[in-house]
Image (cartoon, rainbow, N blue to C red; front, top):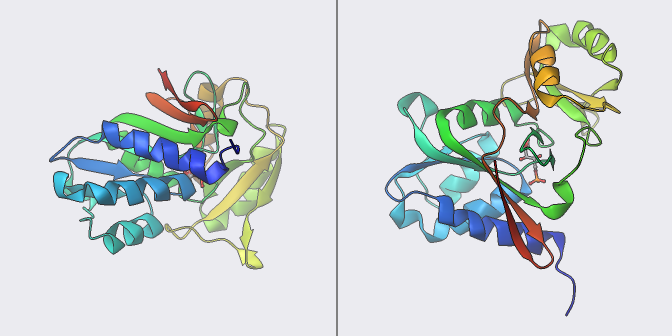
Length: 226
Ligand SMILES: O=C[C@H](O)[C@H](O)[C@H](O)COP(=O)(O)O
């Protein structure tokens, strides 16, 4: 039997995540290629849910393309689950996110949900977070001062570019990626970066990490519960 492709692994966890969707309620939806597979699965049961809250403009557009109603978070008091991918996850459920530049809205939507269901192919599980560059969303005028402060943490801060120009997020901000940072204490690192003036948010989801992680493995979906 041929080995499963990464897309097939992502599709498998997206399918599994549907089991966590609560009928007649709102589901928080993340951003990225794995979340896109989830949206396509969600479309198949859209008649059973009330609607969704999106963590990015791209996710909102994909949800709407399937005729899934997208609610403004300001109109939503609570939601049972937030379902999203990750760039790295450790055995305690702490994650690096923001490879798709949606970290801030992802964190905001996730903070309203009762449970964070992380969906990822098995290659995202790591012992120590930090091989994937840690994204930090920053107010543009503070870019240089924040980069200088981030450099003191040991890694190399690099402004993220797209098509030759600095990437601008859905929130009108820039992203500084921290290369080579070994994150031994994710909760402390998240708190430290959060207090740097000019930082909007950091792509470390440690204080509020995943409650469940569905990992796509060659022999099936592995479920980690935290
Ligand atoms: O900003 C993007 C998000 O945090 C994504 O959830 C993360 O980058 C994982 O994306 P993918 O499922 O494409 O690997």
